[in-house]
Image (tube, rainbow over all chains, first blue to last red; front, top):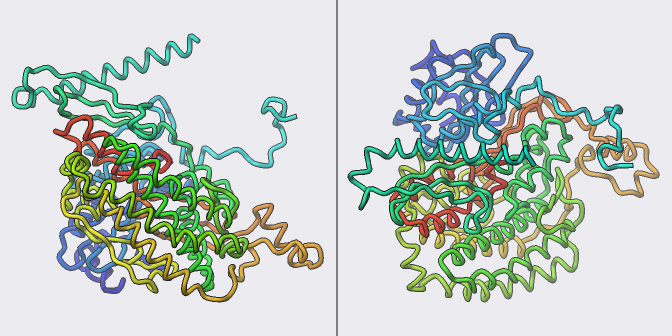
Length: 166
Length: 423
């Protein structure tokens, strides 16, 4: 089954929810309406032809320069029946990054969503236990966002004596 | 001192809160499940010798039976994904070492292949075969550790010490290729920094000759051992359906009977050239996981034999001057070589814009690299799909209703590696 077939089948069902699509390195990317993620994922999981029933991972991305769509949530699905992968992207506004949780579809999404919350501050609605997972609970910012850059490797205002180097 | 005290109090408070929460959670089950209605809360980890790493599990137990458990992870979180956003591509390889440190070469090579996919590099056949040899050696080392530790947790210490000398030989082989043993940083983007040397060939040949016998001896200690079988059969089982729902991959999934293996479904590095089978289990319990790993060691050995006997002639590196340091001779005498040398050392190589996902079959399952490049010198975003992190979620479900000693066995047979779990 080629990516065109997959795209055709999905767009036949959800043409109004698809915002954009392209293909990178053999994987079909589809940008979806963030309010319809559970509906689409459930259909993809249950559809007898596509059978995207394995959730590979969920990733968050921060694009500070694109207004109203700063945070991306990326779902990577794998159909073992057709041996094809699919990437669904939902863009959220940074002021209210909220999206429905898919834990009721995939139990494995539980920690993946917690991780995305922990690092990007995405609120997953109806998540059973949305807490920080890898960082400390008392942390009050989302460290993977781009407004927290790592130290510039070329900065010169450091005093070597304070770092044990003379 | 005061700080520490406060921290301690905080910790105790957290612990008590958790206890209360769990009590509440289990109240409805109390009447059905307990013998005398007395529930104890115990802390399994974070620094418990039986957890083989830093994991905390707060268990609610009734006698010896586990009623529920609550996991805490993140004790050795080192922000690798953030660090990677500031590093040149060749400096990310050492970060990947520290994910699954029992099989670092697989992580290294997986990352190198991700970058090669993004830049569309042509990799010589010899490099691909060399990589297969190294990766399968790493898989053997990884599975050997896991299975011998299962033996330890079942009370058989000999089976832990015995394969260590074999693992040592694998580490010596790494040493010949890259100079390091545990955190290997093996290979480069585009190949290797040097060819296999004479000592490597001698040592690999002797390893291939002696290992099968030593391995079968190790195997015979446990495989049909009545005590070991009684201890591991039925301990920590999971069904194929639940395993898929939890996105479990690797040997732990194959033990449930699903034959998914990235080496076969999406062959990379010429895996399609080799003849091997994917072993599967039936019950998904500790014994099946043990058996699947044992058989995978045999299959890895088969692959190494095929790759080594058919090792193609050719170069040990691709033609990628932007990523592979030129020979010193050329650096001193040629303009281009000097420029490339400078650019590599200063981390000024820029990558094309793109979005790429590359998966390899790591020691514990599908190890994926999701890389987004904005055309800069370091990734815009790099996410590791860490199999441990994903399948460790299923642990409470697997140990529910088991005894504490089964929980220990299940944890070690899942091969949860703290470095990969916490990234």
